[in-house]
Length: 217
Ligand code: TMP
Image (cartoon, rainbow, N blue to C red):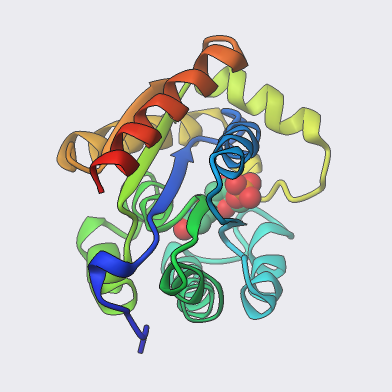
């Protein structure tokens, strides 16, 4: 149960997707600042994680050896975390009209486990229909940059949450292509952003598109 409020009253749900180290969290912080300056309530969150239960599951996912989980188990853990995140954080925030900005969501499961990983598109789509249903994002920015550059930046963060980065450059390149495929399949929701440009230019693009969409909402 995800407890959806009537659609027209719900706050927008904006997700940021892309490979590791493409600059999602920087851009989320920039957009949050601009939305707050415009008087909107903003909830910034992330996946895996974003609620106490989902953060506990995150620790299982991002630490340990690259082969700790099979693609199937990994996807189930991701969706278990996502169910809790929707119930405890995202849906309540949207129900009171807040804008939710989320660092990764179900497109990441499709890209990492479904397309680049071994699980396949259909299984992830089935889990998505079951757990997310109509509670998915209203707008998604896919930050696109070379996986080489991304891995370098992600490694430089040095936070120890590097189980996915440890899967290697070839996997990361498959992930990049997977996100582009997902964006192509959902052009009304997804906007691909060239993330190889400077931070301010990217932030301006994202803010312009967001305010256009909010204005139309
Ligand atoms: P983060 O580094 O963006 O916090 O995410 C941790 C890793 O988890 C990242 O490499 C992407 C991966 N991931 C998946 O494989 N599937 C998912 O559904 C999500 C949300 C993240």
